[in-house]
Length: 238
Image (cartoon, rainbow, N blue to C red; front, side):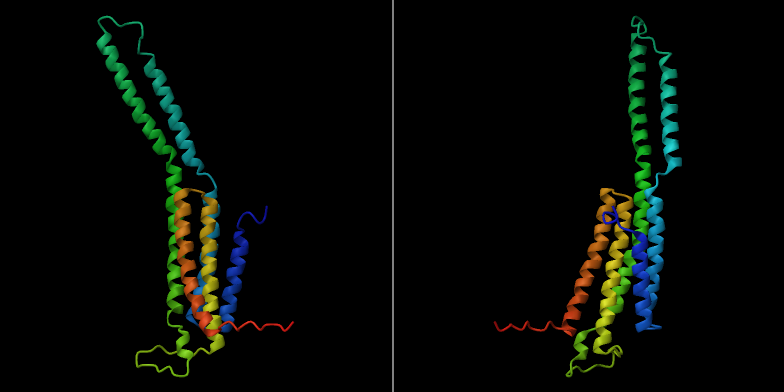
């Protein structure tokens, strides 16, 4: 079902297209370099997600070998326990049973810990993969921070510390639009990790990254609406 899962190749192709559009319209700009970095992160996210979707076979082999070894040890120890002697050796027998129960509890905890090791390893790798995306989102926000539509008004007066603003109305609108598009791509790249590792903690971390990008995108679109206000709808005469 092609529309029920994210295709990383399509996301990479979209990121490459956005990067080329930025480079063509704003060559040698900082935003163009951000677009190139987005493409690199997109390719890394694809390879990371594909690796995370696969089982960690060596770890599973260790878990199975440990379980088999534990079962053999208990079977061997069980040969020394005699359940038909309770006379003078009754106290020693009870101590042996208590020690065996304690050992079973500790071994059980160890098995659970070892069984959850794969889940924890993948969670750690997902968080490592999401960190560049979170950083890139903040970098995109920094690039659009000084792109204020108020500077386009005729009565605006700059100060000595005001940044140089050389973009026209059309270019400023396109600049902010590119920032919004790149933020949308970062959300899709984050979703690749949740698709590969459908773990509640992973999904929560991915939602945080997507929410951060969406919030900043809404702020950008508020600026775009100030540049290009909606024209009032003309009523048709019936």
